[in-house]
Length: 318
Image (cartoon, rainbow, N blue to C red):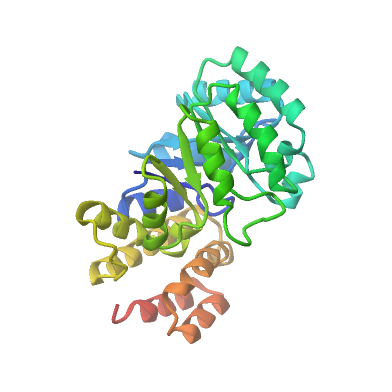
């Protein structure tokens, strides 16, 4: 099974990806947070896609667009500047600010326009195109028409998050709809995305879909990067062992220290660095259920020295 890291805006940037890849290798493909194809690369996006900042990783730029000419122009720029030969289309983002502009999963509400867009794009593109999608905007009944469009075009792969925009991340993924997608898109490369948070979740997907070759994980890795080690161990031994050995904690400390140090070198001022680190710890806090006082102190820290002292306390005895 191949593992993909789901892109999350402002979080899974090159700093995070590089640290994760060093301390918890196991991700086969990293997808960048979305780039608006209507605009030029800004400095932050340029740093994020620069191969020098993503050593020894397979990184796929994800584009937000609904005009073929914008996609073609941005891909040409990415290829000329950095050699990228493949792009991923974001038709899965459920953020209201994105959807209101008919971007992300908002584009799914107009399947006729979507089909015209893909028709023009695939006629002109000479590079692999993958897509990350949801089931629809308001209701799962939209999935039938959306699938009919995906069936018509030679996507390099289709990543399916089996929820609608309205679902956001609530409730359970709609697995019957995912199964329908697998059947209707037979012969195409399919990746599953959604609610793989524990090793048991990963094993359940493998057992339910034995022919599935790819899964994308986002929040599960953010909440517990050690999940990648657990998956690796399961694939080697067949044992569904959720325990956390001491060396995994050592690696997690090393990963968070690397992120902290690179951010200090990259961003200006403690406040900027701490804002990013606290966002990551919002996901990691669940690994420390007995350290609520320390987590609270970490979130209140105003200087990196205060943050560093709390992190040392959190990892003592792990």
